[in-house]
Image 1: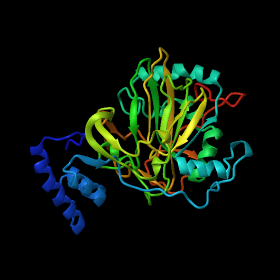
Image 2: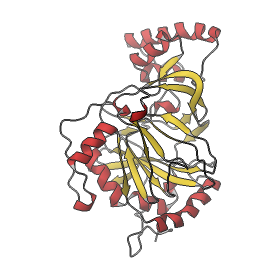
Image 3: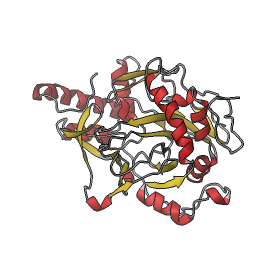
Length: 367
């Protein structure tokens, strides 16, 4: 089933609409699905009635960008764990994070250290991933001890723990290379990452309305207005938005227009110096402008979840429609970032503890 978000010819929509209506009715009856084709089973299981209704009522011209959920700023914004004073977020900082959907930039690494790490990133860009068997910027922490060492830095882990809790896994990382004159990455958002193939979510929280994942974006080069630092739509994390198919906007190979309040005063551009990082909810609409310079802009991220959340349970491979790839999960697993995984809900992978030099910086190779 091709789920590329684009405007379909009228004849295709005329066929698909009654089929979707039938699937929605089938879901409502809770009849067994084991004998149905896999794609149909996934749609019945993972689409809720809001997803069906937006598609059907719009005549297949609009859809939720990901599984719907809503977020309300908690009354209590105190940190969930007590950490050392130098990593501590104040209640005021946490409240602003809950209201805006992001916080930063925060300091972590020296620019000189990041400058030396650039070579690792550029080498990885050309090499075949040992995890997936093809060239991809995803999940290179499995084979790069130095990257794993940066992720384990308390400047990152202790800030995350104050929001998500003491026990954390990393389920995904990615390296970002924005070369000179590279185009913009349009505004987008995600919740459970069903957006990957629009059938199966990656993340399975007990309550989608709570915070169940945080992304940490670390600047390797200075990220500036000119070379495409991150932009956020303040407060947009409070709901998952709909998209209108087609249009000049889009995300990688998917063409759509994201439907949200386009008040320019809510768009916040966040320059980041080399070695600084930003924490944000993937539900906060974000993107980056074009790199108008002759310089590269390198960065990497990690995505952290509480250990009580299942990631890809029972899934052997996943498809990323907008990236055009199929990722087999035989060599993938969540990795413990902080604390202890008492639930073991996901396939896990053990990595050697990173080695550090006398200044507390991760070494290029594990000892």
